[in-house]
Image (tube, rainbow, N blue to C red; front, side):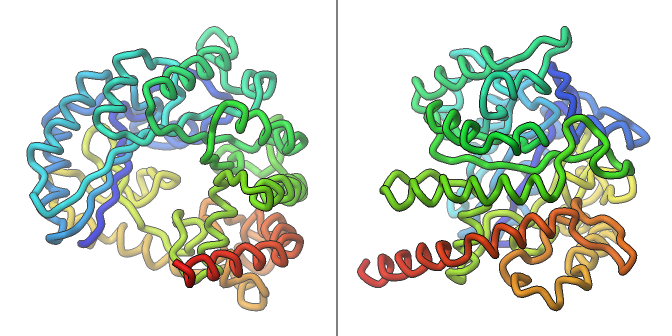
Length: 376
């Protein structure tokens, strides 16, 4: 393989917070074994060796850490992982590190480590204090905004590259201007908004935090207005979904599997070495095997992997006649729901509303980018 991407769960579903909408906590509850504990150094070393055995000369390996809360594995584990990854890395292979964290366990030592090792740090926080503290709570039911924003400032002081991830709940969708404005004030130049997930197997829209397609569509349209105005004024801030659509229109590749329309872009490695094809499908049904018992090539050819890739190539029937099928690409499989005529993306209405509303201005950006590229 030329490129290998790993999403690593060093602390499995363990977390010091009790976010009310946490999809991985829900996913873990739907497995026979809820938590795989903490990743051992031996498992980490096996992962690293397998990655390098499978990468082509001149290739690149991405090690991304997520949870649960990955920093619950402890800084010594991460120091060991980064040191081992660099020591064993072939000379003609490049590596990168990233982490998605709630940031509440970070201190100066973590910040210095992230800076030294070149980690991209994604911090999960929901726009502004009242919104964040509504659902992102600790074990005592207290909000965590103060701890998170303090950690963000600390990371920025250490010149760590920090991005924001904001979950779009029903409440968030009502305040796009405030959410976007507050995240910019906190110093974020790169922001990812992800639609809130309802519990597995439950009818959509029944939770206090649930996001409806109508509300999400309105949120995206208003957010695009704000984002486009910044672009016009030369104050660009990256919003991942919008960036992906622009890249697709330019003929480039998208940065997420949800927008590119292909599943299986990375390996999810749980704390015990179990491997899954997707973070949203780290369930018993899709378990491909375990590092140390099978090689990565063997895992990638497992029945579960082949079935998942085949499923990933499918698209809802309604996509065939959609004018935006080559831009949206059907969206994430995790958002598919069953309708009278077969599966469809729950947020299809949202994405169509956005693209109908914003396409003329997206086209303006595409023309400007093409001109910029021609002129060098």
